[in-house]
Image (cartoon, rainbow, N blue to C red; front, top):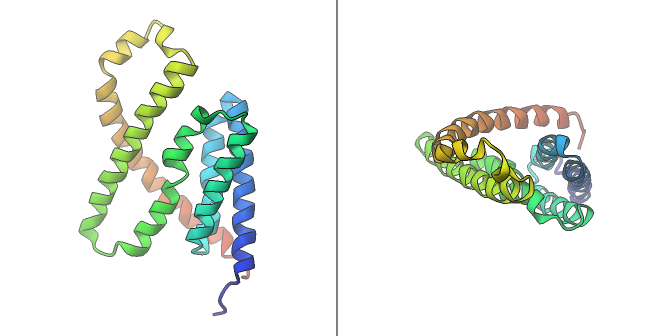
Length: 183
């Protein structure tokens, strides 16, 4: 099999960077599309990983974060979930699949990623929901804060396990789509 060129890696990473930056920018400006923008950016980061371009995916993540930061009028707080977790998660999953060969290590890695996800969600809730969206002024905020840590740790862990499994399946789908490119 012919080795892929660096030009192909750069082009694929640049396309992924552009798509992720546009998705994040649209998500920052239109609140209804915020989660969809982050998810589309995650899928864009998966594109270089489908050809095993880890450095290309990392540079696409950094480039899209910088471009979205500039296009979103320097609104770092809206990009916190992508910067801290969602943008790096596909790269960590790819490294996990490539280098972790013993089956007993996978649950430990899943536990570490779940704690990372929960801490990111806690920070996002404190920065975004309370500070920017004014959740502390709503009537249900007092009730939610009474059970917040249970919901965060138990619900967050359950949501993360489902999310992690789905992201592995989505990476396989992206791999199948990108495999059609002949390089």
